[in-house]
Length: 145
Image 1 (spheres, helix red, strand yellow):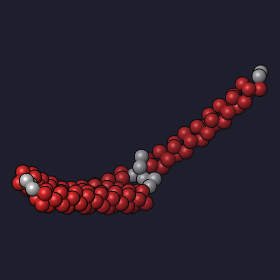
Image 2 (cartoon, helix red, strand yellow):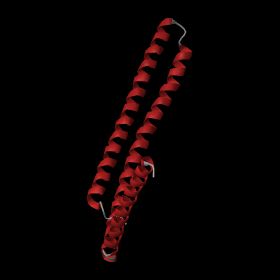
Image 3 (cartoon, rainbow, N blue to C red):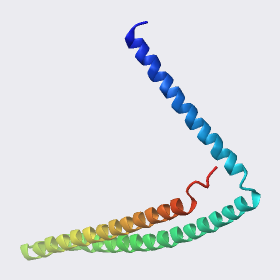
Image 4 (cartoon, rainbow, N blue to C red):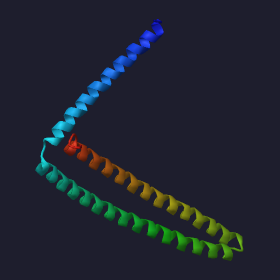
C-alpha cells in the first residue's frame, strides 16, 4: 500500500480513537447526571428560574432606562430641529446665518454627547452581561445535561 494512503489511514484511525474516547467521556457524564436525582435537579431548576427572573427584571429596568434616555434625546433633537428650521427661515442676513451655524454646531455636539451616553450604557450593559455569564459558568459549570 502506498505510504501516502497508509498515513491517511493512520490519521483516520487516530481520529476515530479520539472520538471513541470523547464518546466514552460523554457517556460517563450522562450516567453521572442521571444519578444526581430528581430533588437536586428540581432545586437547580428552581435556582435557575429565580436567576432568570432576576435577569429579566434587570433587563426590564435597563430597557426602561434606555428607552427614557433615547426618548429624551429624540424629543430634544426634534425640538432643536424644529427651532433650527425656524431659525434658518429667519436667517436673512449674515449675522442671523452665523448664529444659525453656531446653533447647528452645538446641536451636532449634543447629538454626539447623546450617542456617547448610549454607547457608554451599551458597554456597561455588555460588561454586566459578561459578569453574569461568568457567574453562571462559575456556579453552574458542568451541571447541564
